Picture: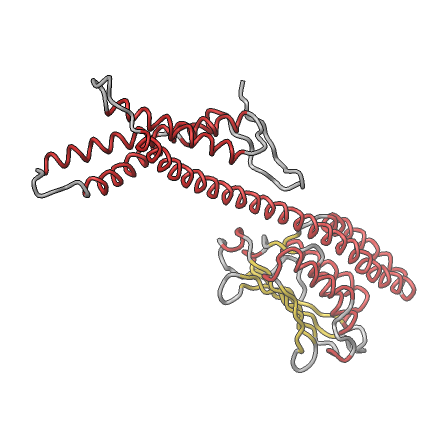
Length: 393
């Protein structure tokens, strides 16, 4: 049975690393890589120490043998300390200890002592009555106690840093999830706010036509019902496309043309390869409605609306323009609820990669321009220009 148990959060709700099994904890220290590192460390230390013993009377062969012998001796102590630390880590993985650093210190001391005694026994094989020099035993044990303590402290610092990085990464993921949920809630609220604004203005147009021309009003009501059947599902979704938005704008303009007659002319020109580009629902119909309400409706002669969709020169974004020949900024500064919510919805969906700007047109009118990043489907498609079916001159 595995003794690893998940521990996803700490006392304050901060994420922590899952507990390791005792075997994994031990093998994380006592493995071939760590043994090799200990060997090279002992080899370097023994080489530096043996250089102090080298004299002009010693041969190179004797010096190399002394170096290797001293490497073997120091490696015994190093492996003992490493094995003791591995056992301590296995124990810490199995049970909770109040003072883990104290347990590691005891393990280092035990490993240094056992390793020094083992080193003495190996160095004096075949000499049963070899005297044990206590000063050598104490100094060697203290040396490896310091080295082992330094290694344990270094290991503890590395693990704390990794644990802190893991907690920060998890907190960043939680922050991203919360931010996404917040943006989704904000996006839904803005959609709910813009739907009645758009629909009430459309229904007001139908009511006005019923009062002036009932027969045309019935025709317009039938067209409006067909329009709403296509528009309402798009409103309730979190995402629309340029193709859907163009079709809704065309339907909306067709309905308004039934009321305004010769006072409204429009044209839609778009690249068919861009139809799959993502947009917030009802962005384009809102811009068209704003151009009608504040630009064309106040003028007795009406005017024209031109909708174009094209790539940016750099090819990384879609530029969507609604140009009208209305009375321009004289009637409205463009700060109504429709445009304000459109800006907020673009920001919620795309961040700073999308924007909405208004510009005065020549000789009169307003250009509403939306920029959004291109979706993958739009970037890889061809750039043959096309006009949606049903667009009127």
